[in-house]
Image (cartoon, rainbow, N blue to C red; front, side, top):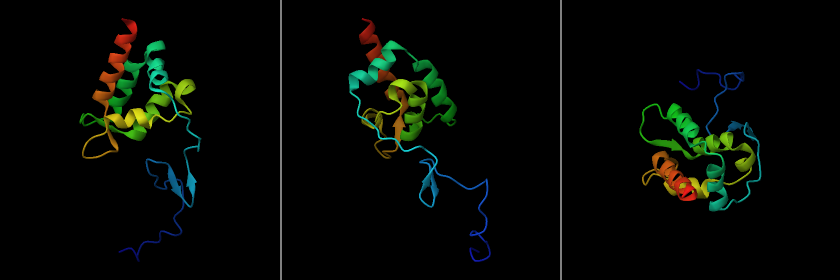
Length: 127
């Protein structure tokens, strides 16, 4: 079957891409940035200064159509950076995101656990 399909001469607008941004031939559609570390207190301060948790959860629910309670690390990273672009845009968020990885698949993040962790930090700050 593969010999019947000419894949070498089919470059066009509908080229497949993967979630990590690889386009092939060494190109990525995501800009390469040097991610700087961020402390847990600075990370949580974004939420305590400007609580966008409700908006973030609405965006997550749009992605999680089957409501299994998980999104990928990249999806959560992207959503957080879209909502807090100035504060988190060039920061490495994986140390905080991976705390909520699924036991069976480290790429999947339990967003309900993440939400609860952030919510508790907001409550502690307000107390």
